Image (cartoon, rainbow, N blue to C red; front, side, top):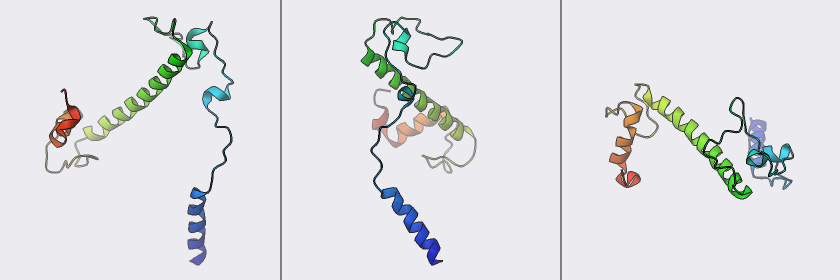
Length: 130
């Protein structure tokens, strides 16, 4: 029993040990990406078949590199938020008595699209301008 407690304490203490301060690797750094002005979006990885270089309104045509990197980062973040939103809609759509945010046992909240009404009822300042 004492050895189990000791092992637990030592493993949890490792979480607070200083990390190595070596170079952090990202996907762009791993492929040794170098900006190339002659390529679409400076040659940033991410163009996928069958569309490839998809920019129907020409936003990427004369955009500076810093702006292009900012747009690519924003696109990734918005995509992740959208995936979480879809998961959230699926979780609360099932007619069960579980809801991670609201007390669903005493209310008929209904379909997931009606959740914004409940947010407005709980915190009216959150959806100002509705």
